[in-house]
Length: 394
Image (cartoon, rainbow, N blue to C red; front, side):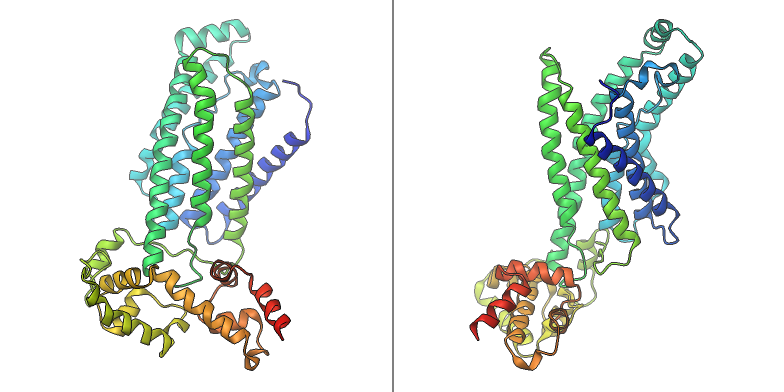
């Protein structure tokens, strides 16, 4: 490859510099939680992976000091992203010694890479370097094993991360109506995109190798670009974690459903639900009264457990009734009432002195970003567009 820097290469290099800068700030931040430290490690790993590819693209490996440079970290990013997902979805997440086992493969591969580098570094002749690395240290064989392990690791950790995110989202939608809590949609979408790209790269690179076909450097460029995109993406996440933010992440307690089942007053969502439709009528009536008469949805911190206590039914039965009677989960059902109330107040001159955000907060929302997103989902309009439509009618 040519050593000339193109526009894309400059974007990549800037991304690497930004990733390292954000990683340093996150690691040194006064409130450096486990999640922030893991995000910092992700950014550093992404930067090193990109640098590894840059060394190859711009021909640095032809220089003795860079030959067999130890960057055997292809199996590092997968467990880091998984543990980061755990830190976002688990209550009281802690990085303990047991979690170090996730990094055993990368430690072994990196140890071999360091030994190979140090032994070959003292040999100035390129051919002798190659002979030592291949005949005595099995460098390329170990590298092929690393590639295979990285492939399987990517699939396993992708599945674990995706399952963790879906479990958290389901728990949140069923139990919490707090709009300032993140649904981690960004993480789910990122994992979906990563899964699709991983499948494409597998079909376009691994399969041709197995079939003995000529491999294309285009796959490296695609992967190179994807790593850069991830670096920019996680850098933005880093800025959001450093700066004050409206949106918080509620942590799903470990064995959340089991803990709910142990509640003193009400059974959990996993409790056997009422099967007969007639049994839902009383619960549905109580729910409607609580929302339409008592305006319980105006409570920003409303949860399924609190709703169940208010109307006097077990949480599992209340959840089942909402699902069967309204065809919605608890979170969506409550937010629907909030949007309806916002629409009423936007059409009422008595509230004209309030801003859109002020009205939203009075109606139970406590995050401007969540309000705009939920309002659009329910009405098809942004709040401002809806307000303009109302003004046109007068």
